[in-house]
Length: 545
Image (cartoon, rainbow, N blue to C red; front, side):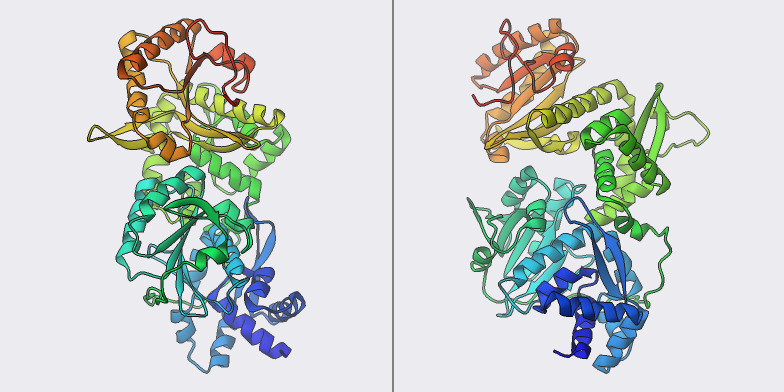
């Protein structure tokens, strides 16, 4: 292929798939790396393509390329059409570019998936979607179409269930590939996927970002055995067209972006800074010490990270009862909502740390977000949960354990049917600890108010209902531990007696372990800090039994 043909084809591919990196472009075109690097380099020199740097916790550092205004004009000239045609029919307009830049972390993972598919099916046709339940679609050479749906970290189960319902109302594609952020939400999505009118395959986003076509990371709703990508796509429905994409009402020629533009944040932030932003979204009002422990960085590095987030306008750093507390600013909430295609308005309404009165001291009455306000109102309890999570992650590093998952209260909640009624449990956190082949999911309850027998029984009751159903195993593969921490050992002793009596009465065994603050602080969550029955010596929680 001549250099001119390479450049023309590179322009067309980057018009369909803005912000490909050169390795992905090579995988999708079948060209050699030298040909791709040469073609893209020449287009950059002529001002038809521009690059942005990018890295995320899932994708290593690279440079991603998109057409400039000159590139769009050259594309129209090559195809013999008016400038309006590519602007309105392809994702090359100013509006499309800003939207893809805001979602750049998700875009990168979906491009890695497309590159893996390109290893076994060639050539592929790719299409991005906006304002529709699917993120993208890929047309295979034999006429089959595959929808791609990603659930972001900040997307809650109800919103994602609505997206899948809307997907089911569209003309079905041959299959749908779902990317999920963690194992629990993958299991939840498997149940939701059974109602879709097309074959569904699910995988963890982190595994998709690093796996090739031969890695067995894809699961179907009805079977636990994972499949590789080639095997999965061999079991799709017959050839079907992909959903129509309505032309936008506006499509302006791309212009030069200002360095401080919000859409450039996913490009300019480093992976550790993005991890910190996600942690602050999960655990508002973290102290710097707890944030550093969860991130696993030293104080000097943490200072650099928080300073960078503050300079970018993403961080709220305030004093609460004499201690520094960190939370995401409204700009940070918008950044994550755009990335995950969730509601910006809902994010601000629930999680904004903005003071209602800029001239008044910051306390729980003066916080805009309904849920951040509640966390600040109970800041002592909030801080205790943060301290547990920080101690667990710190201790896990020193004891060769892996913290696979740590969920805040809003994602730790579980909803289930019991005796014909919708019930729920609302723990303070959920996590999964792994060592080798062994995994231990757990719920955390940090208890300060259950001091009377009746209150203690009321705390146990939701778990008795939950463990009386098959849902704990369905949700997690095994029955999770229930870890309850009290402020003192007296309440702990009474609680264990009440819990044992309630389990005997209900004839339901809950894998419950309890401890108290001083013991957890001295031995650590992974130490000999946990008791299952009154009078028993403290033992380990996370070990094979």
